[in-house]
Amino acid sequence: MGPLVEIRNLSKVYTRGRERIEVLHHVNLDIAQGDFLALMGPSGSGKTTLLNLIGGLDSPTEGTLEVGGQRIDRLGQSELARWRASHVGFVFQFYNLLPMLSAARNVELPLLLTKLPAAKRRRHAAIALELVGLADRAAHKPGELSGGQQQRVAIARAIVSDPTLLVCDEPTGDLDRQSAVEVLTLLQNLNRDHGKTIVMVTHDPKAAEHARHVLHLDKGTLVEAAQAAEPAW
Amino acid sequence: MVKYLPLVWSALLRRKTRTVFTLVSVIAAFLLFGLLNSVRDAFASAGRNVAAATRLITISKESFVVSLPKSLLLQIRSVPGVSAVTYANWFGGYYQHPQNQLVTEAVAPNYFDLYPEFQLPAAQLRAFHATRAGAVAGASLAERFHWRIGDEIPIEATIFPQKSGSNTWTFTLVGIYHVDDPRLQGEEGALFFNWDYFDQATAFGGGTAGWYIERIAHPQEAYRVAHEIDALSLNSDHETKTESEDAFAAAFVSQFADIGLIVGSIMGAVFFTLILLTGNTMAQAVRERIPELAILKTIGFSSRSVLALVLAESVLLLALGGAIGLALAAVAVNAIRARLGAQIPMLPVGTQAWLSGLALTIIIGLLVGALPARRGMRLRIVEALSGR
Image 1 (cartoon, rainbow over the protein chains, first blue to last red):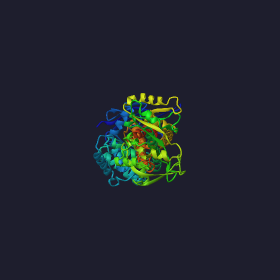
Image 2 (image 1 turned 180 degrees about the horizontal axis):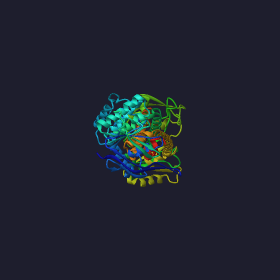
Image 3 (image 1 turned 45 degrees about the vertical axis):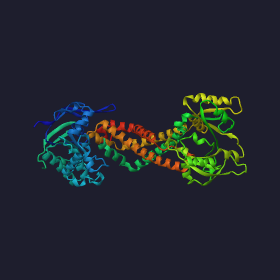
Image 4 (image 1 turned 120 degrees about the vertical axis):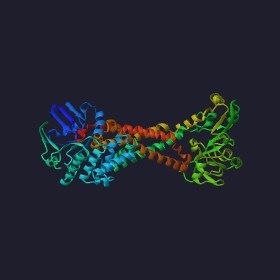
């Protein structure tokens, strides 16, 4: 199976006033379809920037970025938005759920961009919630859920439109150990049982152990590529 | 679009107290709009009816309050094109309490012939002619004071005392007229009594008419007829000014003030304040929700979708407040009309007012939502999510 993500000579430069900050420096990387990759590195190493580029949230300054055979570095903002809607699911450290919507409504959000009728949207949202073990919390608002439960709702939202790729930015960074393990196990299941390709940024070596591969970034450069010695699954 | 409604609605409910206060401001503004619009329409439509084109009013050129000699009646009747003439005197007065000021006129026997829009049963009209101190009241006035036919109604004069020195004129209610045209509902607030009774009993002002009303056969002859009527008293001590009923009504109102300008100015000030208030609310609401809008963009909402969502939120807030405000205005106008009749001329809140109100809610909604929506549309996901 060929790589799902092909990154060639990728650089990202930010300018702040007269200052020019090169966050990523000529990165080359392939991520295979069905992989579960953990990106690690110190703060400011460029791992979140790389994740944002892979997820189509930002555009590179230089280099090429191909996901599923499509050059997303060439897409405009509107095209990127459409591409994200159908190809990528996002999971963030602080869940980023809409506080006034129920869990079910939050999960349904990406489906509003499709032509699915309301009944099907609700059904798909219910299935996604069931998959993350929160079918009985569908009517609860985020404020009525624990951190772990909120993150699982966020995962349900990320997978409801059946994307190829899941990008997760510190998904366990705000969770206690028990909830973190539950969330990581859930991601493993999605990778193993549902074939989702997952790219996860984490500071936590224990979280990284749940991935199939771990890569380290330092000062915008991939410094080490290692296969997890013994994945925790 | 309906599928986005829960999303828009949830944004409004995010800060319930703030939304409620803003909503109350919008309701108050549109309540005021409904009430003032009703007053303005009433003044603007004064004398506007089918018969208006065939009626002329003759008053003293000097002033509306200066009476004209009765001798003009026969002369006016002889002007070619005039098919009927009647006359009336302003009386005014109040009922029971000075707060209950009335529109009361002493009218000639044929007065109702020239006002077919005042629907008075034939038997009651006969009773009016036959009863010296008889009076006819509009339905809303009668309803306001719970008058019934046969009631003795004492009216306190504010201008015309009786020869006996008493200010109290007691009339017998012999008829109640209705006006079907909703635009003329304000006309139902008047009280008419016999001019002959007035002429005989008043301490002064007898033998004169306050104004003449002419029915003309052909509206296209109005200008010529008016000119000829005024020519009758040219160079006399009672020169006249004859004009259409519309022009007369407008001139009557303009004696007091430019109602349109006053109402327009108040509404302008109200809506300007509303724009500042709701604009500030929307700006604050969007500023707080930047990360949420960034999430919407992250999961695939386009910049235009985010723009539309924020604008929809703003328009929904205005439309909701506007609808409630106008509904309250409709209820209030009906209550005021029932209570005060013609004292405050008001027309019911009609389709035109609703359409104008709806248009205003959309325009103001788009206006106050424009800047916050633009901010939402232009936000950069990466910066917004990182709190920059």
